[in-house]
Image (cartoon, rainbow, N blue to C red; front, side, top):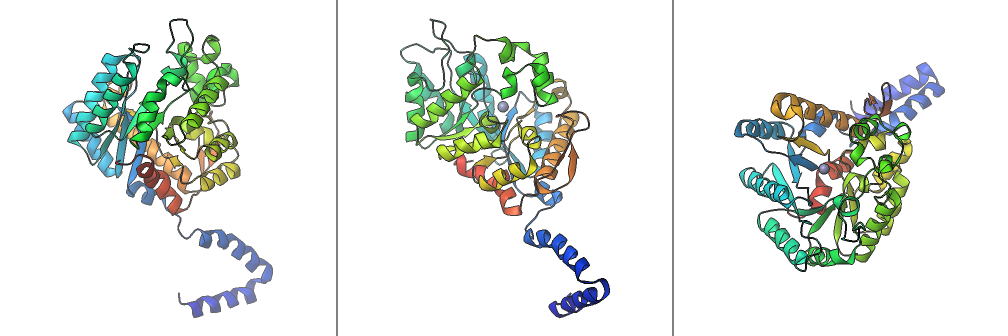
Length: 379
Ligand SMILES: [Zn+2]
């Protein structure tokens, strides 16, 4: 429709329906024209995307082929993150396999290495950790993971837990900062971990901690609590202002975007991934969450914490089922980020619905792709 005929038809509407109806129609239309850069779910599915937090277990050649075809179909690249610093044998197997997967499929699989704390307290610990990290980067790693075993498992001989701001970790963090490498930091757990099961905010956490009492912080008062974990992480960020850090799982501040915003304001070297915590955005007030996503659009990385391959539950044996589940996750997330549809969130509780935040296209491209490349150089 030309400008002239559009104006003419608008005049006709004014004559036919009266000014009040037109005002209402224009009000309805205004946000749509302001969001002319909106994307459909299909467009999100087709654009290049990075899942900036995922894990690949042992996988047979046949399953790997199915998995790569899936990544191609959804235009996805996975950042496969190695974890498990308390068990060097297991971690070194993961490192070997992650490096080999990246070498075989560099276009679709990137990887993050980690370092051992098995030999913590020995004189050459930091040297050995840095050597592992150097090897990883030589093998194409784009980041280094520090896991929650620092803060929640690793202890000194006197029984005190080793926290993230322990000065003995400094040689590792300083070397990362000096070499411009990114630290992926999963430190602490969701606040729900330290609450009674009936006070947890989402069914997913209620189920997980009921099934895994060994990880339920409330039942382990000897482990430093939620506030202590977050405070140690914050002090670590403060001690290393030139170290680039991506905090996993909304930086363990999933329960309130205002709390997370305070840290993003205070620590310009911090970004966070959204993995396994999108549900915690979906239960907070929509307007507040949307304003947060818009304001910090350069500091947020999409991720799922999805797993593929052995070690990822019963579905690991059946790639078709596992991939269908992954597809459902990607589609549901894309609907929530790109549209304002009301979506059922069974992971919160039966019957719970959350309306999507309808982010504009440029913000979606940052969230799904550009931010990961910026915060993980070489990805
Ligand atoms: Zn993870």
